[in-house]
Every structure is written in C-alpha cells, then in structure tokens.
Image (cartoon, rainbow, N blue to C red):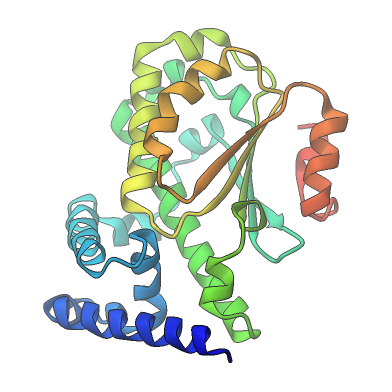
Length: 259
C-alpha cells in the first residue's frame, strides 16, 4: 500500500470514528449504524463530510420513521398497482451490479393515479425503492466478501454500477403534459435523491421520443450532485442493444425480448 493510500485510509478511519461519536445516540437505537459498512455510504453520499453525513442520517431516520419504511419493506406489492406499473429486478451487469427494468412507456400515471389514488401509488413506488436499496446493500456485501473494498466500489464509474433500463416505447405524450403526473414523478425523484444514498448507477432510457427532453429538464436539477446518471436512446434498437450488451449479459436482461 502506498503512502497516499495509507493517508487516505487513515483520514477515512478518523472520519468514521468521529461520525460514530456524533451519532452515538442513534447507534443505541439503531444498531446497524454501528457497522462501518453501513456508515460508509452516508459518508460517501455527503462527499465524506462528517457533519453533513450526520445531518443526512438524522433527517433520513426521521423520514423513514414517519414513512414506516420497515413495514413497507415487508409488505407485498398491491397486485392491481403492480399490474399497472410492473417493475422487475432483471439480472446483473457484467460487473455483478444489479439491473432493473420497467416498460415505463406503457405506464399510464394519470389514469392510475385517478384509479388508485396518489397515496397508494406512492406507497408502491416507495416499496420499489426500499426493496431495491436492500438488494443493492446485500449485493455490495457479497462483493466485499468476494474481495472488493468499499473504496474500489465507490470509485467505479456510474456506468459500471447499478442499472435501471426504462423502455419508453408506447409512451402516451399526454402523460408528459399532465400536471398531476409531473408533480408525482418530480416528487419521486426528489425522494430518491434525498433519502436513498445507496442508489447509485445509471438510468438508461430506450425508445425515448423528443418530449422526454422536457422531463429531463425538470428532473436534472434534482440529480445535481447525486450518484445517478442518465443516458437516452431513441428508437434505434441496434444502438441501444449494442450499448446495453457491452455491460449486461444478454441472457439476463429482458430488453432483448419483446415485452
């Protein structure tokens, strides 16, 4: 190990111990925060600022208590809402990160928000986030047990981390022009960026039309400083399939199939 690596490690270790002291009351109530592995991601989310990580943890725990996250994690999806917004864990990348998939172009948020109510729809998407976060956390545990360090994982480019592939084929443009839909989606993006520091990687949009640019303009300010990148492809399937297969095992991901 080089002298610079030793210095970096010692600096990180001292920040970790300082953070543990500052959240000692939290650790007493939530033992998982005593674990270095868990705290690392809050430090990482705040660029290794101890004070900001402490604020993040306290605000996050308050929101999670108010939202009853533990209960949502254990709940099954409401079948009719899942059928309206089917969403799948779809295998892994070639670097053993997780891939999820959704046929977002077929989602009809305006219609389903009216049918099921905003609260029920938001509960479903919160479950997606909470369960996805746990999958990421468990997967990184496996990677570290296999020999990767948290620092090595942290330094991977976003394209080599977790993937979300959203097929926008069939998108009803009135969905992007619906004020209730846009409010709902912007709020969902805000929740992801604010309360889910483990969510990092790349969102790949395929079969995206020009009106998607309006949506990106709305959500990009929320992504500033986050660990999420956006890549957009039009309907040229040769381009986006080639790109996806450079990173993902074709046998694992269903964008290669008609769906």
